[in-house]
Amino acid sequence: MKFRRRKFLQLAGGALALPALSRVAAADTYPSRPITVVVPFAAGGATDVMARVLADRLGRSLGQSVIVEDVTGAAGGIGVARVVRATPDGYTLSVGTLTTHVLIGGLYDLQFDLLNDLVPIAKLGYEPLLICVRNSLGVKNLQELIVWLKANPGKASAGIPGVGSTGNLAGLAFQKRTQTSYQFIPYRGDAPAVQDLIAGQIDLMIEPSSNSVAQVQAGTITALAVPSKTRHPNLPDVPTTDEAGLPGFYASIWFGFWAPKDTPKDILARLNAATVEALADPDVKARLGKLGQQVAARDDQTPEALGALQRAEADKWWPIIKAANLKGE
Image (cartoon, rainbow, N blue to C red; front, side, top):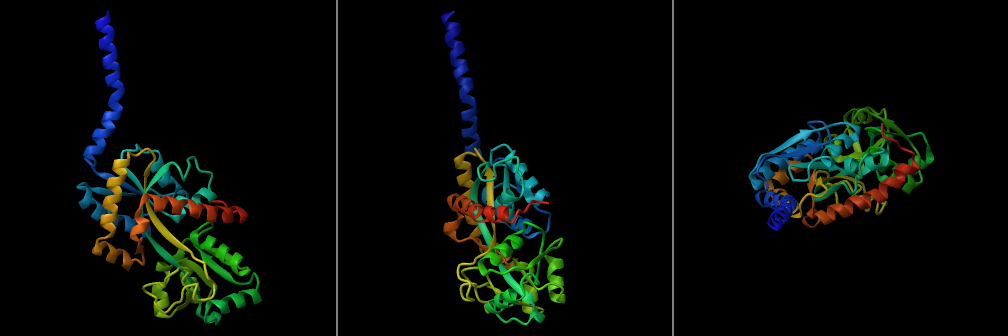
């Protein structure tokens, strides 16, 4: 009986150790099969294209195929939830933006904790917004726009790609900072809004720059300022908001990379190293640059930096969403 009891305890102890041992073994051999990166938007958008550019390079670094899967709905919330519920083994990852990994937390009653149910891998890059107006408005700089808005309270119209979008919230912040008021006109996307700006049907837009750089260069709309600390590389003559007389007013859309919480730390480290290597690739930088996207600074590519940014942005934008009583559609 003693032998049997001793043998049972040994077997039981071994069984309890198996999960831990299997996790260690999995981490040591990671990755041993293809990795899925979930994009919470439709194919062809800026986030999808960025994910595919990185997937090619990550696959070479990791020695496995990296597959991009587009999961749309609820402003990205459905795609994010797909990763939250995934096994934390490094084989299902989330690429997203300020919208999907911060703003939806203020717009929707989520069934998960947006800030804690995912762990950051790296900040990937960012795209500055651009403050643009219709040419016929007749203002030549940002200060003239602010003066005009104050002289015409509530009369101006700004195009946005939906309530709660980055441009909508940037516009609300702009109104608060400048003590101005104007109407928001929701569109099905930025493209039709830009067309109405060109046609003079709306007065202004504060939206991601990739939507309007070509039109500014063509002279069909006027860019007044870049809400960033540095000028836009494709529009070197357009001043920053610091230079245009609205210091400290910054707004950009950024991109990040996450895994489900409880993903082993060594797997996260492997993913971060592969991501840093991919972002340093000149071809990746060039391909993203053509999209108007800038690669994150090296110091910002750490998990800690992305986590701090995510929480700081939640502290900044969630009160604005609440004060404006915005709800996801």
